[in-house]
Image (cartoon, rainbow, N blue to C red):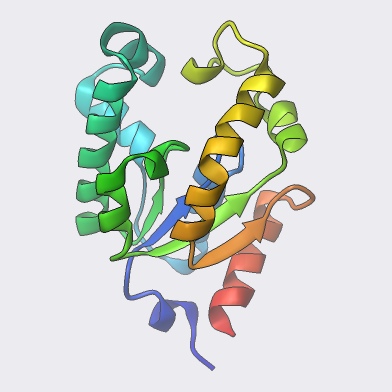
Length: 173
């Protein structure tokens, strides 16, 4: 039986909607497997000296997506587990980069995402109907997530630790 470390010579990239658990699960997975980890959103904030909502407000989404692409390039070259931003799959250039990674889609229903995100300050959820906005975003992104993924894990009824265990099981088999 292959171990995760043998299976994952390529970096593992967690994709999915905001609130699906990419940051929490990515960090836990990396710690459990003794691998390096990065969150592309935190990397952007660290590099730019601005938080994501501020970047969106001042420069707009297109500029943010350029920063996100650069962060993904950096992450793929330097880290083994990568938690990506929810919109990472909306940029064509990123699909070419993701082909060199093992992509794990953390899938969650809109209702689950609403419960996890209603009180957050996410820029795409500012001053909008959160359920409606998440439904619209998922409608646009779901197919992109599915097509990009080597592995899909549904996170709705799982704790972050259970998601990590599920990823380990699927990668080890």
